[in-house]
Image (cartoon, rainbow, N blue to C red):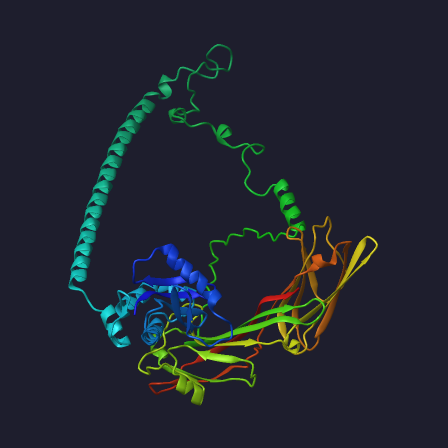
Length: 526
C-alpha cells in the first residue's frame, strides 16, 4: 500500500490542505485534485474512484472532501481504515469544517497527517496517540525560546538606555538655548534702558519738516516693537483675502449632481468633544443561539421554479467559559424535506433519541468567545421543486406601445411576513429616470448602475400582494431580466426552536437568547 497524498479539497476541486508522501511535483498533484470532482457522480454512494493511474478514496465532510490519492496496487481495505482515522482527526483540530476553519488550522492538520502516514504507509496509531505526539514537549524548543526571550529582553534594555541618553542630550541642549536667550534679553533690556526720555532726539516738531521724524524712535514707541513685531494693523489678517476652509458653492453643486444620479452621499459629520462613540453591539446574554437560514431561489419569468435550495445553521455563542458546560434541547418542525446533520463532535445518539445537542465528552465545555458567528452545532438543507414553498413570487408583464415600454410588476407573499424587501430591476442606460405611474411602496433609480429598486419595508397580512407600473423608452423586454430580490424574515422553513438549555454541573440554567433569521441570499427571476 502506498498513499501518494492526503488532501482536503472543496467540492470544486480547490486544494485547502494537501500532504504528499512521495516525490511528486506540484503540477501533478494539482492535476489529480482538480480532476477528482469531475469523476465523482452525483447521487451515488461510493467511497472510491479509479482512473488509469491512481485510485481516489474519499469521504465527504460537510461541504468538503477528505481525499486519499493512492496507486492502484494498494490495499483498499487499509486505505479505508486510514481514511476513517483521518476523518476522526480533522474535527479534533478544526471546529469549523469549512474553508476558513481548515485554513486557520492547516498546519495542525498536516502535522496530524504526518503522524498517521509515514512514507506512504499507515502507522499503527490511534486518535489519542496522535494528539499526544503532536502536543509533546521538546527540551530543545524550550531552550531555544529561553535564549530568544533573553535576547529580546537584552535588546529592550539597550533601547531604554539609548532613549534615556537621547532625552538627557535634548534637556542639556534646551538648557543651553535658554541660557543664551536670557543673556540676549538682558542685553536688550540694558539697551532699552539707555534709550530713555533724556536721550530722545526726535520730538513732534523736530526733523525735516513739521511734525515728522527721520527714522528716530519716538516716546510712544518702545524698542521691543522693533525686535521683529509688527503693529496690530499689519498683523491682522484681511477679511477679504486668504484661504477659506469649508464647502464652496462649486462643491455643493457637485454633490447635488451626484445625488441626482443616484449616488449615496455620506456627509462627514465629526462628533463634538463632548460626544462619545457608541459602543459596538455585543451580545449581553451569557448564551446566544442563532438560527439562520439562507435561501437560493431561481424563478422563471413565465412561471414555475428552476431552483430552490435552502441551507440552515444553528450556532452557539458563549461569553464565559464556565457557562460552556451545557446541553441544548431543540424541537424540529414537521417539514419532511429538511435534512439535518450534526457537528462531528456532537453526541449523535443523544440527539437522535432525545433531540439534545451535547458534546461526546461531557467533561469538555463548548468553546467560548468565538466572535460574532459562534460555533456551529447543527446544519440542515432542503431542496424542492414545489413552487408553493416560495415565500415571495414576482410577475413581470412588459409591453411595448409605440416608442414606450410599459412594465407592470406584481408580488405575492402568501404566508411569510417579510421585512426590508428590495426588488431590483435592471434597465438599459436611460437619459432620464423611469416614469413611475403607480406603486405600492417606494422606489429609487440608480443612474450609474441603471437599476430601478422597488422597496417595501414590511409585507404582512395587510399587503400580501402589491404592484408597480412604470414607463421607459422602447427596449427589448429581455433586458429587464434577471430581477434580483432581497428580504429577511423571522420565520424559518425548518421551524426549529430551542426548547431549553440544560446545565451539566447542576444549578440554575444560564440565561440564553434565541435569534431566528431567514435571508434571501441569491433570489432571482430569470
